[in-house]
Length: 161
Ligand code: HEC
Image 1 (cartoon, rainbow, N blue to C red):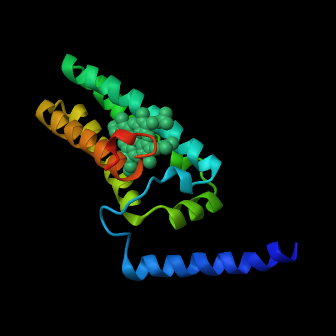
Image 2: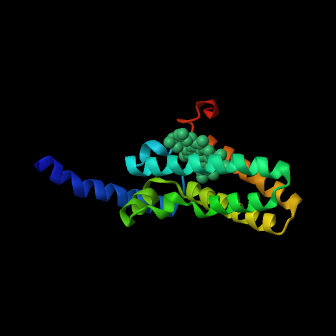
Image 3: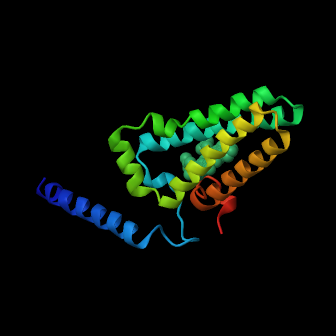
């Protein structure tokens, strides 16, 4: 009991030090990234997996819609990816603080960029601009790969160095 009580300020102190270190020094050096999921609470791990499964399904639908010239379907699915920020929607302030403490800034930036691309894809699809749709979709696939290479080598060990 005494040990547990004593360890709480220590842990908070260490987290503050880490947060300050990240603010000053920046995210870990490129190439030194680690899998993100093991650092998350079980709830956040679950939210991340749910979001990824829904992104995977929507991406498969988009591929089929793109090669069928179905602009309306591309727009609807891409918008769904953009809106289904499950990770953001179901997070309490505590969850969010935890995520921000453990996720490198680079991960958060990549996640935002990915969701931004899905909004651009939806816009291109509503405008019926097919070359732009293909260009955005290619960049989205690049985002999947680049993020998995850096932060999901536990789930996708083939990407491990
Ligand atoms: C910003 C980072 C990021 C982006 C972008 C991203 N992912 Fe992921 N993805 C992850 C992480 C981290 C995991 C590992 C989650 C885990 O280990 O439970 C993951 C896991 C997955 C999984 C495995 C889910 C499971 O069953 O455990 C699938 C499928 C997946 N992603 C699909 C995609 C697809 C498709 C895209 C792009 C269209 C994409 N992801 C984009 C970070 C990302």
